[in-house]
Structure formats: C-alpha cells, structure tokens
Length: 391
Image (cartoon, rainbow, N blue to C red; front, side):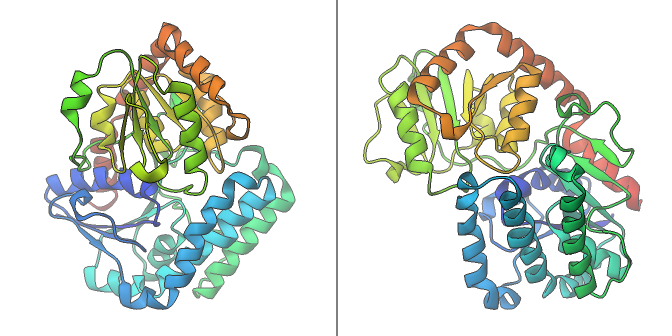
C-alpha cells in the first residue's frame, strides 16, 4: 500500500480527472488525499478518499481568491499576451503562494510516497522538490496549448522569469523550472487527438478517465419520454458573466424545435425556458451523454472528452484560454465544427446542429477518436503508471 497526494486548483475541470484516478488507486488499497483551495461536493470524492482545504491558512486569502475566480470572466474579452498574464501572473502563481502556506504541513503529516501536481498547481511540485518527495504532473488539457506563443523568445523569457521568481521565494535556487515533473506527465487525452507525432518521452497519454462519482439527481423519466434528437449544452463552471447571453442564443436557435436540449446551467440563468429544454444546475454529465446525439460546449476539456467517449459530434464555441486549441483539434479530427463565441449567432447554432445531426461523417470521426481514447487505457492505466513510480 502506498500514499498518494493530489494537489489541485479550484477549477473542477482540473480536479475531475484526478478523482477518477484516485478512485482507481483507492480500489487497489492505497491511501489517497486531495489538497485544494476550495471545497467540492462531498459526494464527488471517491469513497475512502479525503479532500482537504486548509481553511485556517487560507482565511487571509479569501477575498483574493474570490477576486481571482471572478477575474476568469474577463477571459472572453481579452486576448494575446493579456490572456497569458491573466493565467500565469494573476491566477496560477497566486494560487501557488496561497497553497504553500499550508501544504508543507499537510505533506509532513500525511507523508505521501508520491505527490501528483496538476499542471497549473505549481505548489505541489515546489513542495515535493523541497521535501525530496517524488512527484508527477497531470495535464487535463491538450498539450502544446500555448502553441506558437511559447516559441516567442520574449514570452518564454517572461514566463520562465516568473516561475524562477516563485521558486526563489520558496527557497529553491536552481536556474530551471521545476513546476512540471521531468519524471512523468500524465495527459488525459490520446496521442492521436493531441496530434503529436513525436511527444516527449515524459508524456504518458492515458485518454479521458472514468470512475469518479457521477450520480447526482436528474429527471431521467422526462428524458426517456422525449422524442427526436437530444443535444447537451454546457458552459462549464466558470464564465458566469456571459452565461445569460450564451444560453439566450441557444434558446433562440433551438427553442420549439423537434429537439430535446439538456442545458447544464442554473434555471434562473434565463427568466423562462422553452418546453423542449431540460435545465439543471448540476447534471450527471457522463451518464446524460449516453442519451445524447450531439453536444454544444465552449471547449472545456472534460465535456469534450465525455462527448468523444460517447462518439458524439461537437459544436465548440471557443471563448478563452485552451478552448481555441481544443477547437482546432476537434476540427482536425473531423468530429465537430467550431465557431468563435464572439461571432456566434443563433442562426449559426441552428444550422450547425442540424449538420452535426444529419451528416454521419462527424459521428464516424468521433468513433475513431473514441477508439483512440479507449486504447489509451484510462484511469486504470494512469493508476498503474503512478504505482510504478513508488512500488
């Protein structure tokens, strides 16, 4: 039996795949703990695992954390270097500083055999490096997400300068970044979907992972009674400010159509909803996907993965961050269509959804990508890879 400690950011899209891997480790008799900056619903933590939020140490940062999370809504209105600044300088590095106030004490008490740091949770790697504990990285978004931007010398120099500065604050004087493991990076997609002909040896593509608790309430009877095609629509858990405008466009496009739409959003997002919409704040997404015929989303990778795992064609409306890179991968794979959110009109949604439902080419491409995901091994492969580091 070994002890595994996951260090995660307060973004459920990054937490979710680790819950599946953690469940696989728990089923094999290991001890598993997560450390994060915000609580998640108790029902989503696998049985036998523990999710720790060091509230005492974080109390002084509560206002800062709220501001950072709210700041993510600005992503759709900015671009280029501003997005990189928001992500790295205003989000990931402050998260690391907050987490480092409590993480060393938690690590000392739990004494993990391995620390698994999410790719934007730099504190996990810093703490592991300082305390001489092996660590690996998990990446829930497609690798090479920054694309050509990171080939620009000034941007790369700026990024490394920030990282090295953070490391020096923590008492690490090496002149190279240690925030990502040089031992192993578990990537939650397939090599085929990522489009990387020669990925670094450190990357282990395990595909999307399953096994996290996903048994929330849902009106299954209503869904079973619905006739015609069924479309799932999600905007993820962030991006609150544009939610109303986004779903208003979806309603204008698909309201009253012979289509059943499952909208993953709070019912008060709009004052009223058409009769062909099933609206719920939390949707057991992976189970609902089994009943769907197509998906509309902004590019959150968990939703994209669930869609492809069920061989569903996707209309992706990229808004910010890694969404654009994911959109390129979807179009390259042939399993969906992309329309930038800023250009999105209700008529575009209606036309594209009809194309996805009627043209079987998209579903066939999604089947090919699904098969590549399944071949990658999933949560069991990821758990085995983690075991091999410590056992």
